Image (tube, rainbow over all chains, first blue to last red; front, side, top):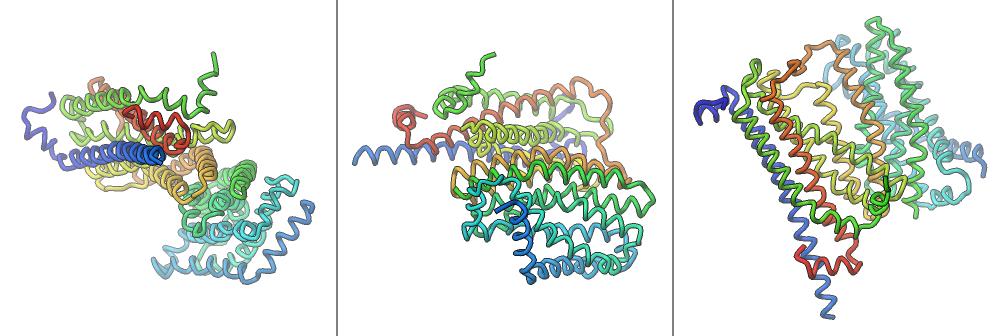
Length: 58
Length: 220
Length: 248
């Protein structure tokens, strides 16, 4: 363990702002990427399913 | 239609549109003029920056010209004629680019002495600048023509071509400006000219084939 | 070695059913490994003796920068495969991969800039590596923009393949030229002071993070490809079965 306490961990020496903003931005962007991928997946499935059901009913 | 007659007719069609040739030239000059006006007009700034300024302006002027190289042929159907003409499409594209190169770059070279005076470029750098333009601009045309083919079916494609193609122009700009800077500080520059020539030859070999693939896909 | 698997890549149906069980495990394993690497790097790895704790940005910056380049390599390879063999999966792959590559290079740029501030004193330096990642970002955005503006699908596929291959050929030249630009400038050399040997407790978490991010991207790209395949093959009966019967 490189840190003695939680505050020390959050402060990161004097570089807390930099480390946490870099990690925050990266995490948010990657989460957005996954969310976007899964949303596209769900939308594709719903669109196609609706289209097939409509064609069946006809 | 033979290859030579195709080249001659392409050249004449471009050359007769005097206004377009003139416009490209004026565009080039006004972009160059933006730098002294917008940044700094003292010789201390301009002399070392001259080659870079000329090259940036040349890159933009050339890309503007190349961007529309297929547009008219695509709209009036003569691009399709080229595809089915039985002649080699990559070779026809090569000739078309060569004709355009002559029409755009020759006037540019004529105006360079005037501009280099206005930018206080020393005479040693001037000749190297001319050499980099002659050796380096073919690669700009050959890379740009790929972008022109890619966007030929898009109505407002000019901005897209800029976005697609300008990153590929960076090495040419870097090698050329470094060559001029090298002479200004008395260093050898032949290696950089060789790099420019290599880029032009490489793009000459690859680009007509790539362009032909895209043109075929676009007209069908 | 049998080449059957390579030819099977021409069939969307085969690829879909083959890739289906892979995406989620790859993604989960990637997330786990990435998390281990990041937590290890953030909490347990010792601070750098020169840069202090800001060096911990390396555990996100380096994997992302590696992915930004690897994604383009894969893109160019797929473009080549499509131009030579007309493999149907290649353009699907390009379309799925380009946004991921763009995200990776953007994250690399931002985390690099944030790392640069405490290390170099400025957010941005025209350093060879930063500049080439910026160019990479523009190349990805160009591919995405091109695909969005071409309506004809056949043409869009060809176009994306051509521009990826051209980019792959050009990338080494671009890299070489920006390195040349930096070295001839004789400016202050803002290179990261890499010690010859990082101690194991520093590079091991990095290894975890890199492997994790590779698997993460592999999982995400498979998911994106699957949606793309379903959409483009929506007329075939297996898609209908897939969508209505199975849970997808």
